[in-house]
Image 1 (tube, rainbow over the protein chains, first blue to last red):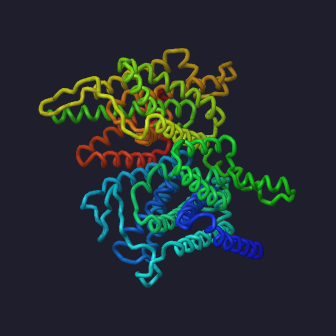
Image 2: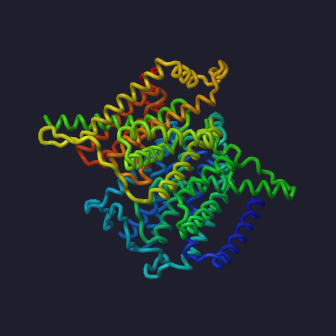
Image 3: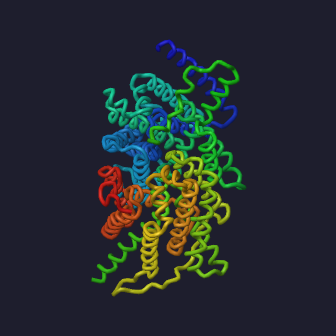
Length: 343
Length: 288
Protein backbone atom coordinates (compact mmCIF):
# COMPACT_ATOMS: atom_id res chain seq x y z
CA UNK A 1 0.00 0.00 0.00
CA UNK A 2 2.68 2.49 0.98
CA UNK A 3 4.48 2.14 -2.31
CA UNK A 4 1.49 2.74 -4.54
CA UNK A 5 0.49 5.57 -2.23
CA UNK A 6 3.88 7.18 -2.68
CA UNK A 7 3.68 6.77 -6.41
CA UNK A 8 0.25 8.35 -6.57
CA UNK A 9 1.33 11.15 -4.27
CA UNK A 10 4.26 12.03 -6.49
CA UNK A 11 2.20 11.78 -9.66
CA UNK A 12 -0.52 14.02 -8.23
CA UNK A 13 1.98 16.58 -7.05
CA UNK A 14 3.77 16.74 -10.39
CA UNK A 15 0.54 17.08 -12.39
CA UNK A 16 -0.81 19.64 -9.94
CA UNK A 17 2.37 21.69 -10.05
CA UNK A 18 2.35 21.74 -13.83
CA UNK A 19 -1.31 22.72 -13.98
CA UNK A 20 -0.80 25.40 -11.36
CA UNK A 21 1.76 27.17 -13.55
CA UNK A 22 0.16 26.45 -16.94
CA UNK A 23 -3.50 27.26 -16.27
CA UNK A 24 -3.03 31.03 -15.73
CA UNK A 25 -1.81 31.31 -19.31
CA UNK A 26 -5.23 30.16 -20.55
CA UNK A 27 -7.70 31.69 -18.09
CA UNK A 28 -7.27 34.66 -15.76
CA UNK A 29 -6.57 33.81 -12.14
CA UNK A 30 -9.71 35.49 -10.80
CA UNK A 31 -11.91 33.06 -12.76
CA UNK A 32 -9.58 30.17 -12.03
CA UNK A 33 -9.90 30.73 -8.28
CA UNK A 34 -13.66 30.29 -8.35
CA UNK A 35 -13.34 27.22 -10.56
CA UNK A 36 -10.98 25.70 -7.99
CA UNK A 37 -13.37 26.55 -5.15
CA UNK A 38 -16.26 24.94 -7.02
CA UNK A 39 -14.01 21.97 -7.69
CA UNK A 40 -13.51 21.55 -3.98
CA UNK A 41 -17.26 21.83 -3.43
CA UNK A 42 -17.85 19.19 -6.08
CA UNK A 43 -15.30 16.94 -4.43
CA UNK A 44 -17.13 17.23 -1.10
CA UNK A 45 -20.31 15.81 -2.58
CA UNK A 46 -18.35 13.37 -4.72
CA UNK A 47 -16.88 11.96 -1.52
CA UNK A 48 -20.11 11.36 0.38
CA UNK A 49 -22.27 10.46 -2.62
CA UNK A 50 -19.83 8.64 -4.86
CA UNK A 51 -18.02 6.76 -2.13
CA UNK A 52 -20.47 6.79 0.76
CA UNK A 53 -23.72 6.39 -1.17
CA UNK A 54 -25.31 9.31 0.68
CA UNK A 55 -27.20 11.52 -1.75
CA UNK A 56 -27.33 14.90 -0.08
CA UNK A 57 -29.62 17.46 -1.70
CA UNK A 58 -28.32 20.08 0.67
CA UNK A 59 -24.60 20.24 0.08
CA UNK A 60 -25.12 23.93 -0.65
CA UNK A 61 -26.29 24.36 2.94
CA UNK A 62 -22.83 23.43 4.22
CA UNK A 63 -21.20 25.61 1.60
CA UNK A 64 -23.36 28.54 2.67
CA UNK A 65 -22.84 27.83 6.37
CA UNK A 66 -19.09 27.83 5.82
CA UNK A 67 -19.25 31.14 4.00
CA UNK A 68 -21.48 32.73 6.65
CA UNK A 69 -19.39 31.30 9.50
CA UNK A 70 -16.30 32.83 7.91
CA UNK A 71 -17.95 36.19 7.30
CA UNK A 72 -19.43 36.49 10.79
CA UNK A 73 -16.23 35.42 12.49
CA UNK A 74 -14.13 37.69 10.28
CA UNK A 75 -16.26 40.73 11.12
CA UNK A 76 -15.92 39.96 14.82
CA UNK A 77 -12.26 38.98 14.95
CA UNK A 78 -10.77 41.14 12.23
CA UNK A 79 -8.36 38.61 10.77
CA UNK A 80 -8.81 35.48 8.68
CA UNK A 81 -7.05 32.44 10.14
CA UNK A 82 -9.47 31.59 12.95
CA UNK A 83 -12.54 32.44 10.82
CA UNK A 84 -11.37 29.95 8.21
CA UNK A 85 -11.25 27.31 10.94
CA UNK A 86 -14.79 28.29 11.89
CA UNK A 87 -15.80 27.85 8.25
CA UNK A 88 -14.69 24.23 8.51
CA UNK A 89 -15.88 23.44 12.01
CA UNK A 90 -19.35 25.00 12.00
CA UNK A 91 -20.66 23.05 8.98
CA UNK A 92 -18.98 19.89 10.26
CA UNK A 93 -20.70 20.18 13.63
CA UNK A 94 -23.99 20.99 11.98
CA UNK A 95 -23.65 18.00 9.65
CA UNK A 96 -22.69 15.81 12.60
CA UNK A 97 -25.95 16.68 14.37
CA UNK A 98 -28.07 16.44 11.23
CA UNK A 99 -26.39 13.21 10.16
CA UNK A 100 -26.79 11.66 13.60
CA UNK A 101 -30.47 12.52 13.52
CA UNK A 102 -30.93 10.96 10.11
CA UNK A 103 -28.67 7.93 10.24
CA UNK A 104 -29.52 6.88 13.77
CA UNK A 105 -33.15 7.10 12.71
CA UNK A 106 -32.19 4.68 9.93
CA UNK A 107 -33.50 7.07 7.32
CA UNK A 108 -32.38 6.25 3.84
CA UNK A 109 -33.53 6.56 0.31
CA UNK A 110 -35.72 9.41 -0.75
CA UNK A 111 -36.31 10.47 2.86
CA UNK A 112 -32.67 11.45 3.19
CA UNK A 113 -33.13 13.59 0.12
CA UNK A 114 -36.27 15.22 1.53
CA UNK A 115 -34.67 16.09 4.85
CA UNK A 116 -31.46 17.54 3.43
CA UNK A 117 -33.49 19.52 0.91
CA UNK A 118 -35.84 20.81 3.57
CA UNK A 119 -33.00 21.80 5.89
CA UNK A 120 -31.43 23.79 3.06
CA UNK A 121 -34.74 25.56 2.51
CA UNK A 122 -35.14 26.32 6.20
CA UNK A 123 -31.71 27.92 6.29
CA UNK A 124 -32.45 29.84 3.10
CA UNK A 125 -35.74 31.18 4.41
CA UNK A 126 -34.33 31.95 7.83
CA UNK A 127 -31.28 33.83 6.55
CA UNK A 128 -33.47 35.68 4.07
CA UNK A 129 -35.68 36.94 6.87
CA UNK A 130 -32.86 38.31 9.02
CA UNK A 131 -32.81 41.78 7.49
CA UNK A 132 -33.77 43.54 10.72
CA UNK A 133 -31.29 45.03 13.20
CA UNK A 134 -32.36 42.44 15.76
CA UNK A 135 -30.35 39.72 14.04
CA UNK A 136 -26.81 40.34 15.18
CA UNK A 137 -24.04 37.91 16.06
CA UNK A 138 -21.35 39.84 17.91
CA UNK A 139 -20.60 42.80 15.66
CA UNK A 140 -21.95 41.17 12.51
CA UNK A 141 -25.41 41.96 11.20
CA UNK A 142 -26.87 39.04 9.26
CA UNK A 143 -28.42 41.43 6.78
CA UNK A 144 -31.16 39.18 5.33
CA UNK A 145 -31.24 39.04 1.55
CA UNK A 146 -28.59 41.75 1.31
CA UNK A 147 -26.03 39.42 2.84
CA UNK A 148 -22.92 40.44 4.72
CA UNK A 149 -20.45 42.62 2.82
CA UNK A 150 -17.22 44.20 3.93
CA UNK A 151 -15.56 41.62 6.14
CA UNK A 152 -11.86 41.00 6.53
CA UNK A 153 -10.60 38.90 3.63
CA UNK A 154 -7.78 36.42 3.61
CA UNK A 155 -4.53 37.65 5.11
CA UNK A 156 -1.16 36.17 5.95
CA UNK A 157 -1.65 34.39 9.30
CA UNK A 158 -0.57 36.64 12.12
CA UNK A 159 -0.50 39.93 10.23
CA UNK A 160 -4.02 41.13 9.37
CA UNK A 161 -2.77 43.90 7.07
CA UNK A 162 -1.06 41.64 4.52
CA UNK A 163 -3.97 40.68 2.33
CA UNK A 164 -3.79 37.65 0.05
CA UNK A 165 -5.58 38.47 -3.19
CA UNK A 166 -5.31 38.26 -6.94
CA UNK A 167 -2.67 35.80 -8.13
CA UNK A 168 -1.64 34.91 -4.58
CA UNK A 169 -5.21 33.93 -3.76
CA UNK A 170 -5.26 31.67 -6.81
CA UNK A 171 -2.17 29.83 -5.57
CA UNK A 172 -3.68 29.50 -2.10
CA UNK A 173 -6.84 28.00 -3.61
CA UNK A 174 -4.83 25.62 -5.76
CA UNK A 175 -2.74 24.40 -2.86
CA UNK A 176 -5.86 24.06 -0.71
CA UNK A 177 -7.57 21.95 -3.37
CA UNK A 178 -4.52 19.72 -3.78
CA UNK A 179 -4.25 19.26 -0.02
CA UNK A 180 -7.95 18.39 0.26
CA UNK A 181 -7.65 16.05 -2.72
CA UNK A 182 -4.73 14.23 -1.12
CA UNK A 183 -6.53 14.03 2.21
CA UNK A 184 -9.55 12.52 0.47
CA UNK A 185 -7.28 10.06 -1.34
CA UNK A 186 -5.67 9.11 1.94
CA UNK A 187 -9.08 8.75 3.61
CA UNK A 188 -10.35 6.48 0.87
CA UNK A 189 -7.25 4.32 1.11
CA UNK A 190 -7.61 3.96 4.86
CA UNK A 191 -9.76 1.24 6.38
CA UNK A 192 -12.41 3.86 7.13
CA UNK A 193 -12.72 4.65 3.44
CA UNK A 194 -12.90 1.01 2.45
CA UNK A 195 -15.62 0.34 5.02
CA UNK A 196 -17.49 3.41 3.76
CA UNK A 197 -17.45 1.97 0.25
CA UNK A 198 -18.65 -1.31 1.70
CA UNK A 199 -21.57 0.50 3.30
CA UNK A 200 -22.37 2.08 -0.04
CA UNK A 201 -22.53 -1.35 -1.62
CA UNK A 202 -24.52 -3.02 1.11
CA UNK A 203 -25.36 -1.32 4.37
CA UNK A 204 -26.90 -4.38 5.99
CA UNK A 205 -24.00 -6.64 5.21
CA UNK A 206 -21.51 -4.21 6.69
CA UNK A 207 -23.49 -3.85 9.88
CA UNK A 208 -23.77 -7.62 10.15
CA UNK A 209 -20.00 -7.78 9.88
CA UNK A 210 -19.85 -5.70 13.03
CA UNK A 211 -19.25 -2.20 11.73
CA UNK A 212 -21.36 0.57 13.19
CA UNK A 213 -22.67 1.90 9.89
CA UNK A 214 -24.65 4.71 11.53
CA UNK A 215 -21.63 6.26 13.19
CA UNK A 216 -19.47 5.81 10.11
CA UNK A 217 -22.02 7.41 7.83
CA UNK A 218 -22.42 10.31 10.25
CA UNK A 219 -18.66 10.89 10.34
CA UNK A 220 -18.33 10.68 6.56
CA UNK A 221 -21.22 13.11 6.19
CA UNK A 222 -19.48 15.52 8.57
CA UNK A 223 -16.20 15.23 6.66
CA UNK A 224 -18.02 16.06 3.44
CA UNK A 225 -19.61 19.05 5.15
CA UNK A 226 -16.23 20.21 6.45
CA UNK A 227 -14.81 20.22 2.92
CA UNK A 228 -17.87 22.04 1.60
CA UNK A 229 -17.57 24.54 4.45
CA UNK A 230 -13.90 25.13 3.67
CA UNK A 231 -14.87 25.80 0.06
CA UNK A 232 -17.54 28.18 1.39
CA UNK A 233 -14.96 30.04 3.46
CA UNK A 234 -12.74 30.44 0.41
CA UNK A 235 -15.73 31.52 -1.64
CA UNK A 236 -16.50 34.26 0.89
CA UNK A 237 -12.96 35.52 0.32
CA UNK A 238 -13.34 35.39 -3.41
CA UNK A 239 -16.72 37.11 -3.62
CA UNK A 240 -16.09 39.45 -0.64
CA UNK A 241 -19.80 39.19 0.16
CA UNK A 242 -22.01 36.35 1.36
CA UNK A 243 -25.69 36.21 0.42
CA UNK A 244 -28.54 33.77 1.11
CA UNK A 245 -28.34 32.67 -2.53
CA UNK A 246 -25.52 30.36 -1.41
CA UNK A 247 -28.12 28.20 0.32
CA UNK A 248 -30.47 28.10 -2.63
CA UNK A 249 -31.78 24.94 -4.24
CA UNK A 250 -30.28 26.00 -7.54
CA UNK A 251 -26.85 25.91 -5.96
CA UNK A 252 -27.52 22.42 -4.56
CA UNK A 253 -28.72 21.27 -7.95
CA UNK A 254 -25.55 22.49 -9.58
CA UNK A 255 -23.34 20.52 -7.20
CA UNK A 256 -25.27 17.37 -7.98
CA UNK A 257 -24.99 18.03 -11.71
CA UNK A 258 -21.22 18.51 -11.42
CA UNK A 259 -20.90 15.11 -9.78
CA UNK A 260 -23.07 13.34 -12.35
CA UNK A 261 -21.37 14.94 -15.32
CA UNK A 262 -17.87 14.46 -13.97
CA UNK A 263 -18.41 10.94 -12.80
CA UNK A 264 -19.50 9.43 -9.51
CA UNK A 265 -17.17 7.14 -7.64
CA UNK A 266 -14.10 8.98 -8.88
CA UNK A 267 -12.19 11.71 -7.09
CA UNK A 268 -11.23 13.63 -10.17
CA UNK A 269 -14.67 13.52 -11.79
CA UNK A 270 -16.54 15.91 -9.51
CA UNK A 271 -13.62 18.37 -9.54
CA UNK A 272 -13.42 18.40 -13.33
CA UNK A 273 -17.21 18.42 -13.64
CA UNK A 274 -17.46 21.41 -11.34
CA UNK A 275 -14.68 23.39 -12.95
CA UNK A 276 -15.78 22.50 -16.47
CA UNK A 277 -19.45 23.27 -16.03
CA UNK A 278 -18.78 26.43 -14.05
CA UNK A 279 -16.51 27.62 -16.84
CA UNK A 280 -19.12 26.68 -19.43
CA UNK A 281 -21.67 28.67 -17.47
CA UNK A 282 -19.27 31.58 -17.35
CA UNK A 283 -18.85 31.44 -21.13
CA UNK A 284 -22.58 31.05 -21.71
CA UNK A 285 -23.24 33.98 -19.44
CA UNK A 286 -21.56 36.19 -22.02
CA UNK A 287 -24.21 35.48 -24.66
CA UNK A 288 -27.93 36.11 -24.43
CA UNK A 289 -29.28 33.92 -27.20
CA UNK A 290 -30.00 30.83 -25.14
CA UNK A 291 -30.91 30.86 -21.50
CA UNK A 292 -28.26 29.46 -19.18
CA UNK A 293 -30.62 27.41 -17.02
CA UNK A 294 -32.02 25.68 -20.08
CA UNK A 295 -28.60 24.36 -21.03
CA UNK A 296 -27.79 23.26 -17.47
CA UNK A 297 -31.05 21.34 -17.36
CA UNK A 298 -30.52 19.81 -20.74
CA UNK A 299 -27.03 18.66 -19.77
CA UNK A 300 -28.38 16.99 -16.64
CA UNK A 301 -31.18 15.18 -18.49
CA UNK A 302 -28.92 14.02 -21.30
CA UNK A 303 -26.27 12.75 -18.91
CA UNK A 304 -28.75 10.83 -16.78
CA UNK A 305 -30.18 9.25 -19.94
CA UNK A 306 -27.10 8.55 -22.00
CA UNK A 307 -23.99 8.76 -19.86
CA UNK A 308 -25.05 8.05 -16.29
CA UNK A 309 -21.51 7.16 -15.28
CA UNK A 310 -20.13 10.55 -16.15
CA UNK A 311 -17.27 11.73 -18.29
CA UNK A 312 -14.23 10.62 -16.32
CA UNK A 313 -15.13 6.90 -16.11
CA UNK A 314 -16.25 6.97 -19.75
CA UNK A 315 -12.96 8.49 -20.85
CA UNK A 316 -11.05 6.05 -18.65
CA UNK A 317 -12.89 3.14 -20.26
CA UNK A 318 -12.28 4.54 -23.71
CA UNK A 319 -8.61 4.91 -22.88
CA UNK A 320 -8.46 1.38 -21.58
CA UNK A 321 -10.28 0.04 -24.61
CA UNK A 322 -8.09 1.82 -27.12
CA UNK A 323 -4.76 1.17 -25.43
CA UNK A 324 -5.48 -2.32 -24.26
CA UNK A 325 -4.13 -2.22 -20.73
CA UNK A 326 -7.26 -2.30 -18.68
CA UNK A 327 -6.83 -0.69 -15.25
CA UNK A 328 -7.36 -3.18 -12.47
CA UNK A 329 -10.17 -1.39 -10.68
CA UNK A 330 -12.12 0.33 -13.42
CA UNK A 331 -15.26 -1.69 -12.91
CA UNK A 332 -15.47 -1.21 -9.22
CA UNK A 333 -15.99 2.50 -9.29
CA UNK A 334 -19.35 3.59 -10.48
CA UNK A 335 -21.43 0.57 -11.11
CA UNK A 336 -23.28 0.80 -7.86
CA UNK A 337 -22.40 4.27 -6.78
CA UNK A 338 -25.99 5.35 -6.85
CA UNK A 339 -27.32 1.92 -5.99
CA UNK A 340 -27.41 2.63 -2.28
CA UNK A 341 -30.42 4.81 -2.84
CA UNK A 342 -32.25 2.65 -5.26
CA UNK A 343 -32.91 0.28 -2.40
CA UNK B 1 -65.23 36.00 17.00
CA UNK B 2 -64.71 37.50 13.58
CA UNK B 3 -61.03 36.90 13.98
CA UNK B 4 -61.65 33.24 14.78
CA UNK B 5 -63.69 32.84 11.59
CA UNK B 6 -60.97 34.52 9.55
CA UNK B 7 -58.31 32.27 11.05
CA UNK B 8 -60.46 29.23 10.38
CA UNK B 9 -60.96 30.24 6.75
CA UNK B 10 -57.24 30.86 6.39
CA UNK B 11 -56.42 27.44 7.83
CA UNK B 12 -58.92 25.75 5.53
CA UNK B 13 -57.47 27.67 2.64
CA UNK B 14 -53.92 26.64 3.60
CA UNK B 15 -54.93 22.98 3.75
CA UNK B 16 -56.82 23.23 0.46
CA UNK B 17 -53.91 24.83 -1.36
CA UNK B 18 -51.53 22.17 0.00
CA UNK B 19 -53.88 19.48 -1.31
CA UNK B 20 -54.03 21.26 -4.63
CA UNK B 21 -50.31 21.72 -5.10
CA UNK B 22 -49.48 18.20 -3.94
CA UNK B 23 -52.16 16.22 -5.79
CA UNK B 24 -50.28 15.88 -9.07
CA UNK B 25 -47.07 14.83 -7.34
CA UNK B 26 -49.00 12.43 -5.10
CA UNK B 27 -50.64 10.67 -8.03
CA UNK B 28 -47.34 10.20 -9.81
CA UNK B 29 -45.43 9.17 -6.69
CA UNK B 30 -48.18 6.98 -5.27
CA UNK B 31 -48.82 5.10 -8.49
CA UNK B 32 -45.44 5.00 -10.15
CA UNK B 33 -42.95 5.61 -7.33
CA UNK B 34 -41.49 8.40 -9.42
CA UNK B 35 -40.65 11.67 -7.75
CA UNK B 36 -41.25 14.35 -10.30
CA UNK B 37 -39.08 17.27 -9.30
CA UNK B 38 -40.34 19.17 -12.34
CA UNK B 39 -43.75 19.26 -10.64
CA UNK B 40 -43.30 22.90 -9.65
CA UNK B 41 -42.45 23.81 -13.23
CA UNK B 42 -45.53 22.01 -14.51
CA UNK B 43 -47.51 24.25 -12.16
CA UNK B 44 -45.64 27.28 -13.44
CA UNK B 45 -46.44 26.28 -17.02
CA UNK B 46 -50.09 25.83 -16.05
CA UNK B 47 -50.06 29.39 -14.75
CA UNK B 48 -48.51 30.75 -17.93
CA UNK B 49 -50.95 28.82 -20.12
CA UNK B 50 -53.84 30.34 -18.17
CA UNK B 51 -52.48 33.86 -18.42
CA UNK B 52 -51.79 33.51 -22.13
CA UNK B 53 -55.27 32.10 -22.76
CA UNK B 54 -57.00 34.81 -20.72
CA UNK B 55 -55.03 37.54 -22.46
CA UNK B 56 -56.16 36.19 -25.82
CA UNK B 57 -59.77 36.45 -24.77
CA UNK B 58 -60.73 33.06 -23.35
CA UNK B 59 -63.03 32.96 -20.33
CA UNK B 60 -60.86 32.64 -17.23
CA UNK B 61 -62.65 29.59 -15.82
CA UNK B 62 -62.38 27.69 -19.09
CA UNK B 63 -58.71 28.64 -19.28
CA UNK B 64 -58.01 27.51 -15.72
CA UNK B 65 -60.09 24.37 -15.48
CA UNK B 66 -59.85 22.96 -19.01
CA UNK B 67 -57.14 24.45 -21.19
CA UNK B 68 -54.30 24.56 -18.64
CA UNK B 69 -54.66 20.95 -17.42
CA UNK B 70 -54.91 19.68 -20.99
CA UNK B 71 -51.87 21.56 -22.25
CA UNK B 72 -49.71 20.67 -19.26
CA UNK B 73 -50.94 17.09 -19.39
CA UNK B 74 -49.78 16.87 -22.99
CA UNK B 75 -46.41 18.34 -22.08
CA UNK B 76 -46.20 15.72 -19.35
CA UNK B 77 -47.04 13.02 -21.87
CA UNK B 78 -44.20 14.11 -24.14
CA UNK B 79 -41.80 14.23 -21.20
CA UNK B 80 -42.83 10.75 -20.09
CA UNK B 81 -42.32 9.28 -23.57
CA UNK B 82 -39.00 10.99 -24.13
CA UNK B 83 -37.33 10.78 -20.75
CA UNK B 84 -39.07 9.19 -17.80
CA UNK B 85 -40.11 5.99 -19.59
CA UNK B 86 -36.45 4.98 -19.74
CA UNK B 87 -35.87 5.43 -16.05
CA UNK B 88 -38.65 3.48 -14.31
CA UNK B 89 -37.49 1.68 -11.21
CA UNK B 90 -34.48 3.97 -10.81
CA UNK B 91 -35.79 6.38 -8.20
CA UNK B 92 -32.72 8.55 -7.88
CA UNK B 93 -32.14 8.77 -11.63
CA UNK B 94 -35.71 9.89 -12.22
CA UNK B 95 -35.33 12.50 -9.51
CA UNK B 96 -32.19 13.83 -11.18
CA UNK B 97 -33.64 13.74 -14.68
CA UNK B 98 -36.79 15.54 -13.61
CA UNK B 99 -34.67 18.09 -11.77
CA UNK B 100 -32.90 18.65 -15.06
CA UNK B 101 -36.28 19.00 -16.76
CA UNK B 102 -37.33 21.57 -14.20
CA UNK B 103 -34.27 23.69 -15.01
CA UNK B 104 -34.99 23.18 -18.70
CA UNK B 105 -38.55 24.46 -18.34
CA UNK B 106 -37.39 27.43 -16.28
CA UNK B 107 -35.01 28.25 -19.11
CA UNK B 108 -37.73 27.94 -21.75
CA UNK B 109 -40.18 30.06 -19.79
CA UNK B 110 -37.50 32.70 -19.27
CA UNK B 111 -36.81 32.80 -22.99
CA UNK B 112 -40.48 33.01 -23.98
CA UNK B 113 -42.02 35.15 -21.25
CA UNK B 114 -38.96 36.97 -19.96
CA UNK B 115 -37.76 37.25 -16.42
CA UNK B 116 -40.59 39.53 -15.31
CA UNK B 117 -43.60 39.09 -13.11
CA UNK B 118 -46.89 38.57 -14.90
CA UNK B 119 -50.32 37.95 -13.44
CA UNK B 120 -54.06 38.13 -13.91
CA UNK B 121 -56.58 39.60 -11.54
CA UNK B 122 -58.75 37.39 -9.41
CA UNK B 123 -62.18 36.78 -10.99
CA UNK B 124 -64.03 36.64 -7.66
CA UNK B 125 -64.34 39.79 -5.52
CA UNK B 126 -63.42 39.84 -1.86
CA UNK B 127 -65.88 40.43 0.97
CA UNK B 128 -65.66 41.28 4.63
CA UNK B 129 -66.32 39.29 7.79
CA UNK B 130 -66.85 41.88 10.52
CA UNK B 131 -63.84 44.14 10.44
CA UNK B 132 -61.76 41.80 8.31
CA UNK B 133 -61.46 41.62 4.56
CA UNK B 134 -61.44 38.10 3.12
CA UNK B 135 -60.35 37.13 -0.36
CA UNK B 136 -63.34 35.50 -2.05
CA UNK B 137 -61.01 33.55 -4.27
CA UNK B 138 -59.85 31.51 -1.26
CA UNK B 139 -63.28 29.86 -1.17
CA UNK B 140 -62.95 28.96 -4.80
CA UNK B 141 -59.68 27.17 -4.04
CA UNK B 142 -61.26 25.32 -1.13
CA UNK B 143 -64.13 24.18 -3.36
CA UNK B 144 -61.80 23.13 -6.18
CA UNK B 145 -59.65 21.03 -3.90
CA UNK B 146 -62.67 19.34 -2.28
CA UNK B 147 -63.99 18.48 -5.76
CA UNK B 148 -60.54 17.28 -6.72
CA UNK B 149 -60.31 14.89 -3.78
CA UNK B 150 -63.84 13.61 -4.42
CA UNK B 151 -63.02 13.17 -8.08
CA UNK B 152 -59.86 11.18 -7.42
CA UNK B 153 -61.69 9.03 -4.85
CA UNK B 154 -64.52 8.40 -7.30
CA UNK B 155 -62.22 7.43 -10.15
CA UNK B 156 -60.11 5.13 -8.00
CA UNK B 157 -63.00 3.47 -6.18
CA UNK B 158 -65.86 3.28 -8.61
CA UNK B 159 -64.52 3.01 -12.12
CA UNK B 160 -62.90 0.19 -13.98
CA UNK B 161 -59.98 2.45 -14.84
CA UNK B 162 -59.43 3.11 -11.14
CA UNK B 163 -59.53 -0.59 -10.39
CA UNK B 164 -56.86 -1.27 -13.02
CA UNK B 165 -54.81 1.64 -11.73
CA UNK B 166 -54.99 0.39 -8.16
CA UNK B 167 -54.10 -3.11 -9.28
CA UNK B 168 -51.09 -1.86 -11.20
CA UNK B 169 -50.09 0.20 -8.18
CA UNK B 170 -50.04 -2.86 -5.90
CA UNK B 171 -48.62 -5.47 -8.26
CA UNK B 172 -47.68 -4.15 -11.66
CA UNK B 173 -46.35 -7.56 -12.75
CA UNK B 174 -49.68 -9.20 -11.93
CA UNK B 175 -51.60 -6.50 -13.77
CA UNK B 176 -49.32 -7.02 -16.74
CA UNK B 177 -49.88 -10.78 -16.57
CA UNK B 178 -53.63 -10.14 -16.76
CA UNK B 179 -53.12 -8.24 -19.97
CA UNK B 180 -52.93 -4.63 -18.85
CA UNK B 181 -49.86 -3.02 -20.31
CA UNK B 182 -48.07 -1.31 -17.44
CA UNK B 183 -46.37 0.93 -19.97
CA UNK B 184 -49.71 2.41 -20.99
CA UNK B 185 -50.97 2.62 -17.42
CA UNK B 186 -47.87 4.56 -16.43
CA UNK B 187 -48.28 6.80 -19.45
CA UNK B 188 -51.86 7.60 -18.50
CA UNK B 189 -50.93 8.10 -14.87
CA UNK B 190 -48.24 10.56 -15.75
CA UNK B 191 -50.64 12.40 -18.02
CA UNK B 192 -53.18 12.68 -15.20
CA UNK B 193 -50.52 13.72 -12.70
CA UNK B 194 -49.19 16.43 -15.00
CA UNK B 195 -52.70 17.63 -15.75
CA UNK B 196 -53.37 17.94 -12.02
CA UNK B 197 -50.15 19.94 -11.63
CA UNK B 198 -51.25 22.18 -14.47
CA UNK B 199 -54.66 22.64 -12.87
CA UNK B 200 -53.07 23.58 -9.56
CA UNK B 201 -50.77 26.10 -11.20
CA UNK B 202 -53.65 27.57 -13.16
CA UNK B 203 -55.97 27.90 -10.18
CA UNK B 204 -53.25 29.51 -8.06
CA UNK B 205 -52.16 31.86 -10.87
CA UNK B 206 -54.46 34.78 -9.93
CA UNK B 207 -53.04 34.74 -6.38
CA UNK B 208 -49.35 34.88 -7.15
CA UNK B 209 -47.30 37.02 -9.47
CA UNK B 210 -45.83 34.51 -11.87
CA UNK B 211 -42.12 34.41 -12.70
CA UNK B 212 -40.32 31.54 -14.48
CA UNK B 213 -38.84 30.40 -11.17
CA UNK B 214 -42.21 30.31 -9.37
CA UNK B 215 -42.21 26.51 -9.39
CA UNK B 216 -39.46 26.34 -6.80
CA UNK B 217 -41.78 27.81 -4.20
CA UNK B 218 -44.21 24.93 -4.60
CA UNK B 219 -41.99 21.94 -5.08
CA UNK B 220 -40.65 21.76 -1.53
CA UNK B 221 -44.10 22.01 0.02
CA UNK B 222 -45.54 19.46 -2.38
CA UNK B 223 -42.55 17.19 -1.84
CA UNK B 224 -42.82 17.14 1.97
CA UNK B 225 -46.60 16.79 1.87
CA UNK B 226 -46.44 13.77 -0.40
CA UNK B 227 -43.55 12.03 1.34
CA UNK B 228 -44.94 12.71 4.81
CA UNK B 229 -48.31 11.43 3.63
CA UNK B 230 -46.95 7.98 2.98
CA UNK B 231 -48.21 5.16 0.81
CA UNK B 232 -51.97 5.85 0.82
CA UNK B 233 -52.81 8.34 -1.87
CA UNK B 234 -55.88 10.22 -0.68
CA UNK B 235 -55.69 9.55 3.05
CA UNK B 236 -52.02 10.46 3.14
CA UNK B 237 -52.57 13.61 1.15
CA UNK B 238 -55.39 14.76 3.41
CA UNK B 239 -53.59 13.86 6.64
CA UNK B 240 -50.32 15.57 5.84
CA UNK B 241 -51.96 18.60 4.21
CA UNK B 242 -54.12 18.99 7.30
CA UNK B 243 -51.17 18.74 9.65
CA UNK B 244 -48.84 21.04 7.73
CA UNK B 245 -51.61 23.51 6.90
CA UNK B 246 -52.54 23.91 10.56
CA UNK B 247 -48.93 24.12 11.75
CA UNK B 248 -48.03 26.62 9.06
CA UNK B 249 -51.00 28.92 9.63
CA UNK B 250 -50.79 28.86 13.43
CA UNK B 251 -47.15 30.00 13.26
CA UNK B 252 -47.92 32.49 10.49
CA UNK B 253 -50.56 34.18 12.62
CA UNK B 254 -48.70 34.01 15.92
CA UNK B 255 -45.19 34.87 14.69
CA UNK B 256 -44.71 35.76 11.03
CA UNK B 257 -45.41 34.22 7.59
CA UNK B 258 -41.75 33.29 7.20
CA UNK B 259 -41.78 31.47 10.52
CA UNK B 260 -44.96 29.74 9.33
CA UNK B 261 -43.06 28.26 6.41
CA UNK B 262 -40.08 27.40 8.58
CA UNK B 263 -42.32 25.75 11.19
CA UNK B 264 -43.95 23.70 8.45
CA UNK B 265 -40.58 22.48 7.21
CA UNK B 266 -39.36 21.70 10.73
CA UNK B 267 -42.59 19.79 11.38
CA UNK B 268 -41.85 17.75 8.26
CA UNK B 269 -38.34 16.90 9.44
CA UNK B 270 -39.57 15.84 12.88
CA UNK B 271 -42.44 13.85 11.38
CA UNK B 272 -40.17 11.95 9.01
CA UNK B 273 -37.76 11.21 11.84
CA UNK B 274 -40.57 9.73 13.92
CA UNK B 275 -42.56 8.09 11.11
CA UNK B 276 -40.08 7.29 8.35
CA UNK B 277 -42.78 5.61 6.28
CA UNK B 278 -45.02 8.66 6.38
CA UNK B 279 -48.27 9.13 8.27
CA UNK B 280 -50.18 6.45 6.42
CA UNK B 281 -47.32 4.00 6.87
CA UNK B 282 -48.46 3.86 10.50
CA UNK B 283 -52.05 5.09 10.62
CA UNK B 284 -54.98 4.61 8.22
CA UNK B 285 -53.25 1.58 6.76
CA UNK B 286 -54.84 0.09 3.67
CA UNK B 287 -57.03 3.10 2.96
CA UNK B 288 -56.90 4.69 -0.43
